[in-house]
Amino acid sequence: MSTLTDSAKEKLTRLLANNGLLVIRQCDLSPDQLIAFSRIFGEVVAYTRSSFSLPSHPDILILSNIEANGKTIGSPVSGRVWHLDGHYLEKIPACTVLNMKTLQRAGGDTWFANMQLAYDQLTPEIKEKISELKVVISRVQSRPYNYPDRGEATPEERAAWPDVTHPVVLEHPETGKKALAVGSNVPWKIVGQDKYSATALITFLQEWVRRERFTYRHVWREGDLLIWDNRVVMHKASPYQGARMLYRTTTF
Ligand SMILES: [Fe+2]
Image 1 (cartoon, rainbow, N blue to C red):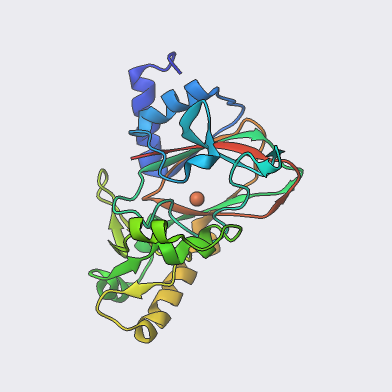
Image 2: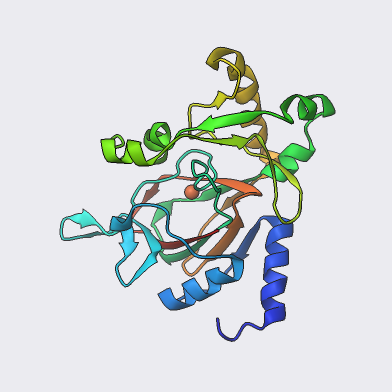
């Protein structure tokens, strides 16, 4: 990565801001290279549990079903519903970088939905209706959606994970473009509305954003390097068979 010039880095960040997702084939990076590459897009911060971090590089999260000493070396099941990474944090992560190290035998595609395109194509009436809406997102309640293989949040986690509030229409801090930020991984609650009156609108928006015309299905190859802007696209993982391992970094 040291060979990338400043203008190449600038081009990459511009491409990412305009498109939301970059796919680079045949780019198997070492841990040091992956971190250096990720820093092009922001400060690298690991915000999820450390037991699945790469021991030599704690900023890299391992996504894997491969076992060693009776337990998986990484997180084997995650993100199987539409979501923005870290949507439950006060500050939503800027970018996620994934590098495919060991390709599964079958399944395992990752789906992406362009939240900006989805917003742009809403009617003016709906845009108006949702322009000021805010949702409450609970990391505690989203646990079974994000990580169905893990237990409920512990008392310590509950204490450390306060609910957060985010706008339904997410404005990108750099481009100013608006995105329809409604994933499916939390029991949504609209600020100022009761659960029942908000359900119809939220269900419509969730189904709208994942319409085929806004989505891309990524079929992985070994060595694939994917970078996405978490404020532009949301994503969803699929079940897979066979050994699989990816490295993930997150930037803020
Ligand atoms: Fe994710």
